[in-house]
Amino acid sequence: MIALAAAMRLQRGIAATSNGRAFDVLPRWPLTAA
Amino acid sequence: MNIVGIETSCDETGVALVRASGDGLPVLCGQALHSQIDLHAAYGGVVPELASRDHIRRVLPLLRQVLAQAETALDDLDVVAYTRGPGLAGALLVGAGIASSIAAALNRPAVGVHHLEGHLLSPFLSADPPTFPFVALLVSGGHTQLLRVSDVGRYELLGDTIDDAAGEAFDKSAKLLGLGYPGGPALARLAEFGDPHAYALPRPLLNRQSLDFSFAGLKTAVRNHAARLDSTCEQARADLAAATQQAIVDVLMRKSIAALESTGLERLVVAGGVGANASLRERLVSECKKRQVQVFFRSWRSAPTTAR
Image (tube, one colour):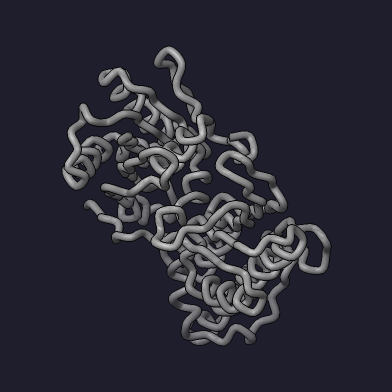
């Protein structure tokens, strides 16, 4: 549930918001690095 | 605060809207899902290019559906979240591109989210949510991990698969048994009619202290048995399916218990697609009850909507 995870991160001030409207994706991304 | 999430990491297009206020748990206000199973069934697995193209077709209609469910206007969105990874690169780019475009048009932030974190935190939408800290068993087609979860964003890896994921073992074993796609649920259905003790299958790494997993040897053993099966004997196929499921569930259950014992934690969260397996749920509930450990699975307050 992506919306939920974003909400909980925003509540804790740890959400990674996009910078200057650029975006990327990470096909391989360890959860411990999120 | 209204947060919409767009998920396009593999073969399902998902859109959901949650509402959050203060420190309270966010509330699910709308959700819609489109499965691409029919699209990929003819190929026996997910075709990345087809997946990407289908996500493009589905995201905006699903978003409109979710906004209507939540009685929320597009302008009332405060944040647009999307799956940043892991997943299929092209499929991820569809969700990221659309989410970032909507966010730019509304002049709102876009937030990239880890797909597994979405799985991991999904029990917080249930009527009886867990509290931190807990042990998480993440089991899907691409991942099999045990984690100590201290809070949102504080994850310590306790164990991981050194080769295949549990979901992959389910799917590939199902393919060896001539079952359709997606194989995991098909194997579980066939296993209901089989004897799990009819075949002796390996449980790799169970005798080691490590919390790591290995399923490649199991897959090879299933292949060897499947090659000797009488294709006309339905009972033999059901027996092999049951033995395969039991071997995978045994390993997942025993490693989860070992993780709980090593951390001293008393809560287990099971997340990911394989967490829907009924046999795994029954075994974990039974073993956790004996140890007075609470176990949590994904369960929404309302059933997900499936859009076709």
